[in-house]
Image 1 (cartoon, rainbow, N blue to C red):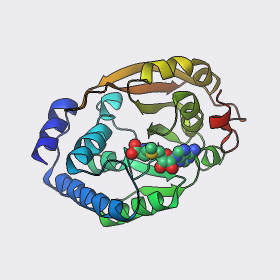
Image 2 (image 1 turned 180 degrees about the horizontal axis):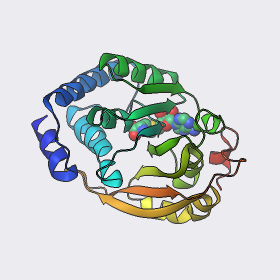
Image 3 (image 1 turned 30 degrees about the horizontal axis):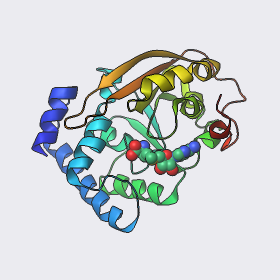
Image 4 (image 1 turned 135 degrees about the horizontal axis):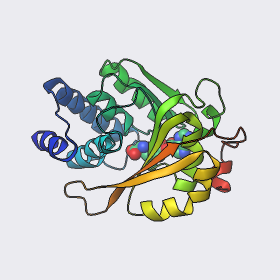
Length: 236
Ligand code: SAM
């Protein structure tokens, strides 16, 4: 954990407190234990969890700078990434975690209870469903997703949830720039505008990573998101 704390500070300017380190250790222990029973994440070793889950989740702070959002939604959160590590370091966040798979949602509930995290809502649903509900549509300052869908599809999951003036953030690997290029039309139709791509380097990880930062500049037309499954089958 010492290396994680050092890297968090050096790479992202995050100073982890003692209680935050303890929370991350508990999260790591529970993830390892649950992974033995349920297949929650492909990364199953301690080093991998610290670098590819915790540090990679922290990298989102490069996009939002000194001021974290008030309301954040993490779409396709899986075992809670990047939302839960971000909540651990920014306790003031009002966080919503969404995934369509029951065992992942169950694990997120478990961690939220175990770490006594406040103002966290965990929802079992598809992004396409909640994007059409009054409770969630255009309600969030930031919507974030990692490893959920290619950018053309992801734009239709994220942008309907973001208020005008807010931001959609996609954590991507080396295909990031090409995916953004392919998604230009979709992003525009949905009310977004690509602000920039922020390169991210993680210790010991060769692959280039990018944060795709998309400003929401206009309301999303009511037709989007389309019915569950349609954005992936017929990307904009
Ligand atoms: N974001 C996590 C991470 O980076 O570790 C999980 C990534 S996992 C590869 C993709 C997750 O997205 C899965 O848990 C899947 O159930 C969820 N997912 C995919 N499409 C979705 C949708 N349309 N709505 C909600 N969840 C979705």
